[in-house]
Length: 362
Image (cartoon, rainbow, N blue to C red):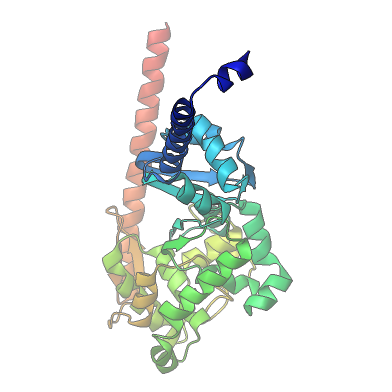
């Protein structure tokens, strides 16, 4: 029946039908081609970050895009993937903002064209806290970073001793690829330290008669002590005075490092037999006690010129500096008295709170 109908059509009618078919096909193809290359086929109103933790198939991609509130057409995404031949996509961190064509979108993910992200390193922390914070901004785990920092093969490749490595983790915000390995991260950090500290201040270190690691070690003590930025050069000068006059540094941060705890030190702590205890051993400790900030390293390289040899904390969070031991003793007594008053006030408040709780219960 269909064939008989076809043969009864005039040549003009056949031409019209064929033309209609061609126009329809071309229209559909043109529309699809337009959609494939349209600049807003994949659209993010605000910047979104797409993380692919492993090589990801096209079937998983829609769920990840939906979680980020990305505007796209599900069926077209599958069609475009089939047309372009992109079936799986590299792990990585990808920033999506504004509009992208399917072609550009798939090419970015299929070729692993990642966008670097910010990795912030803060000063004056512990190695464990440092590793945890860095790992939270990268794809590896904190345990992986700590293991790399202790791995003899990695340390040999980096040409640095284990106890000196952490001090060179220069605080700043860096642009890094999320998929970098712990080893790549450490190499990058050592390059940053070399470029920002070692090379620019090579002559100054030679003038002071200290190696970069000795400067970092002293700076790490200053970093731990200084709660006020303006005091860094003053504290640095104080420790330089002690070093240059062959005194023991008697730096509390080295004792805290030796006992492995940041707390109020006891008399027993000051007698702990440990190479980092500068109350027992002269000179600098074997290595840094934390990772000092760039400003602290600068303050250590260019200390304030003064005659201070002593310092004690103040209620304001800064320090009171003294040239003589007698003056230091007086200020220490004032600090101790303030601490005693604070403790007594705290005990009074706790007792008052307990009394009120007892009255309300009865």
